Image (cartoon, rainbow, N blue to C red):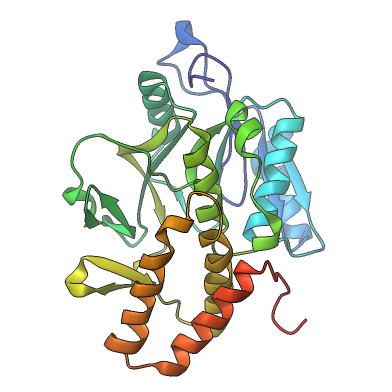
Length: 298
């Protein structure tokens, strides 16, 4: 697709997907919403009632009695949207929201202008929208504030599960998220596929999706020139580091392995003098490389 030339369904909070930009002759009109798909990992009847009340006939409620995690939930929702005939999906999880009512229309305009198969908004801090929810690299510099970003479009970089608009044609090539990753790293792995696909994608810097701050776990090293990731609890670290091991062993990522080892060795051994933490990182990283996807305690 080139966004705007075909009808597009979309997704909102909690795995919702809405749908459909208009053909060129109708550009400028508000996007038409075909379906709102909500994946509920808790299979909660109250959520079902809320979807029916808010979404009406457009609502598609997908309960799961198995916790599919973020990766499985998005895969379930994406495949459902495709089965319903979606030409594109606007996707997000349940802890954020579009920055304003114009986000989807702006994304569609940029997708058409740039000839994109995927386009994302900037992800900003829900409590302080002038700050980014996650550090964003522009050129060789990591940015943490919205006003530090230059221009109106950043090619080749995207946040895929926070307000991204993805064409169905792109999903034929990159597939759906990998359920095995469960949480943490699933978005990075999906981004890896998008990069290797050769499809055109990027981030629109003129519109935003607001999300709880996630920048605290990205720890600066070497005076802020580089970052490492250190989540605030053992559960998150397990999935983050194990899944990083898998992702970094995949085609397109292996060239970054020397940098990966250097950054985390510096963070644990030099900056924090945490030998135990580094050993745990090595163990989890190796599990991912061996594709050992058992969950903790199993």
